[in-house]
Image (tube, rainbow, N blue to C red; front, side, top):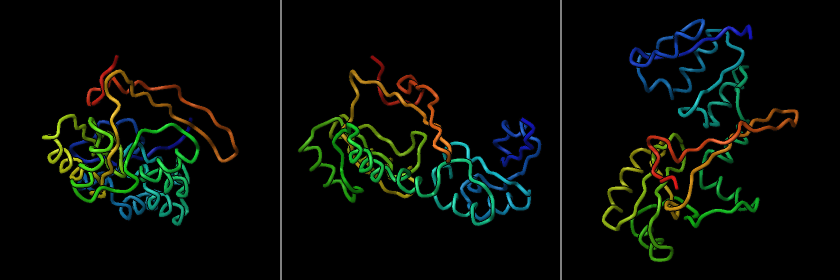
Length: 209
């Protein structure tokens, strides 16, 4: 497409860098989520656009705003949209308001295990602990037995970028995890990139039927 590409990489994770015209070495993997550093690199490299990839800062509205303030285009949703969808409890509220069928879930972050036990008393097992933010399967733990509750809660909180999780009734047996990715632009053109069968992913906690 004639686009000059620049990528950031670490010494331990450089496989993708060979496909770019230029690579910028990061000192530490934590730099992948360092907004100030990444914006500085983009400015110094005279980049006009940044594609955030998947995970890391791809759903972070502050990153989109920081790039905009630096005069750099963020290839992705606006920060307004990201703020509505990056927090999964807010995204659920939006889905429910749009009459999208959803599973029973807590309406706020879980502060302690007692709240989880009260939820289970009402809706039963299995349940999922889910990170409020982030993606890529991290911060998600399936609980099918009461003795798994505490360890799953602690592990989900430990993997959540904000340390916060909510609880949702799990759909496991007889269900499939299918995603559809939507692509749209600022002119109202909307399309989709077909469906993705996540039930067969290596790390998936669901079982295909």
